[in-house]
Length: 372
Image (cartoon, rainbow, N blue to C red; front, side):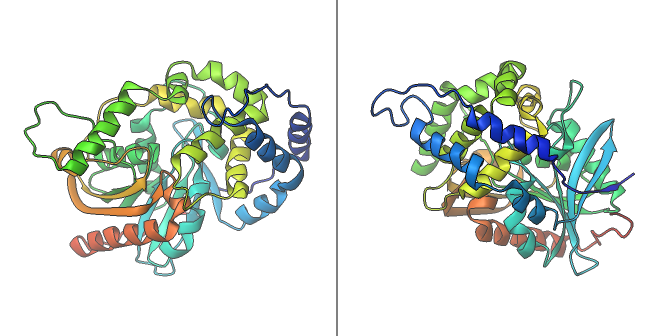
């Protein structure tokens, strides 16, 4: 059963947040620390004070409730999603999947341009936000992909495309594998390509530089990733109990993974942080790092790739083509890891170009009539 959903955070939860922020116990910091030891104290104090006194959750809640939200239960797990139809009844449907530390909020600025040509389904990954915490083992990328296939079936979509970045990339690729007869193509804006010894492929200087960046990242695993991939419950206690801890944990990623020329506003970032805090999903969202497979998922459907210059890493095309049926590859000088939030116009255009080409290749109707 699919049910309409409305965001309505209890006022007591907002009052509790403000009270906790007012009683923050701040650590000290060495002089001129900058970013050498982690998130700078002065900047975090600024963000926390704005969250407490200037940020208005109710304003953003009202804006979000202007979208059509729904929930359904799949394999015993609550699934929240936004479903925005296209004015063209026979348009192709797209399912857009966020990553960590993002949420369905990532796609707010691409909804309007993409719904000109596509029906949009934008779910929250199990364990994230309004999908609520997971309560059992095994909600890995493949299981999420199977849930997405069931969700699209319930909505009546027989043919559709999948798009995502970060974990959304892996989930979208896995969806192409578990539902190849339904998925017309997968578009991603994050595609890790691991070095392959003796691959026998000639690489350009740019490709070699990208591989060196990937090798460096693999040799120096980021602290957040190590903790969430090994002890998500342990870090979850701190993040669920301290709003400033949750703020620093997420704000650091936004600061380090975005293009300085396309910063994400404090208001949008605080809405994302608030979503994690108010739903108490720090630990459950972190579990996906532990449960995610370390192998590359096969994807038999056509793949499109958008590469953004300031992402964590950039993929190496000759290596990607060994694994996937690459039909579309775009390189952008602007944008970082949160492309849908940083440069929504660039991402939306690239997504549109890829999937309209897929419709021309396979014009079967992708729309459903019986869904929410």
